[in-house]
Length: 429
Image 1 (spheres, rainbow, N blue to C red):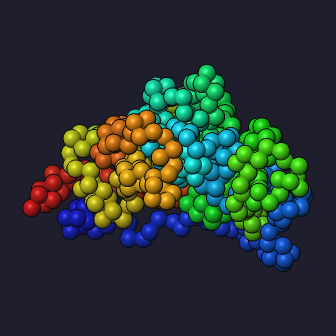
Image 2: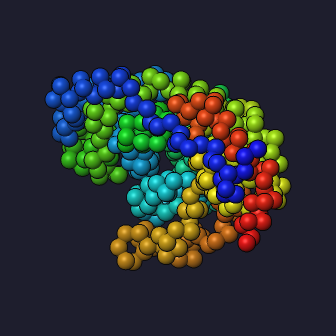
């Protein structure tokens, strides 16, 4: 076998993996129609019908309602906006706490701060990397108002236990489904259990419009409030006859007709795109599980994993080389792999210094210092272990990747494992 590239051998791949995302003629025609119409946005803040957006925005929302079998869907210009609007819609505000897992994109917790509440971080499960229901109950107190559940990497969190706790303590539940469109758990789609489910159309997501997202909901009041936050609510509550003006201060979270037109075409393909991810993930799992020290993604019996990220638990002692060296060797072979995901959020300066709005520590200062959530290192040991020690990942499970491309991943691992002792020796010199 040819030596690893780090030892002077030739690379497994000399060309990058296929381009992502792939835009086709359907998306081009849809955008062209919007441009020719001259109506790039259909929103008007003070007109009741146009307050809901243009025809493409409303069609995209309708498609989400059909797919998820929910009565309400609201298009927004990002999942971050959707999270903020959802938390505001369920009444989160100053002095409140919201439970959030720390292993997620920063917006899952930043959206809490945007409502002037503070996040209390609760550890994740080691198998599926989502919120651990066994740790949840310990974090609830009199200030707890809501729970943000993040369906990370495409595997949904089991929701029935979380919803039982939420009902008992009268907590609202927001599902962050940015990485899990079409994922299922316990017989239902992720996003349909809580008060709101938030989906992302960011450039890197399964369904993409460049930026954008959709929020789904079951309650009319929650849906109305999300729409108010989306579209300058403070300017329209009087004209729309809205009497509850709590959290109706609005931003411009509106989606354009161009984005919605692309989203409609992309969403038509969700099952095909998901099945492509599952096919590549299945191939990788079949061949990677033979290597000592590699634990491919787990899928619970009641779950449908949609593999936004292919995450592997790595045991360096069993595989026989440090995690950093493995990643360096894979990248040298032309295989895109990384370590960890994002640093546990509570270790970021914002939480360590407890400074957000202004210089006086708001909204952290809304809670007495001795009662504020802890953001100390070691707070969530499973998260820290995954990030700093155990997790490696790749994002090659997407539609334009072929089994032949995936085979290069296996070839690279095989080569590196066979030459692990030589690689270790060179790394020490």
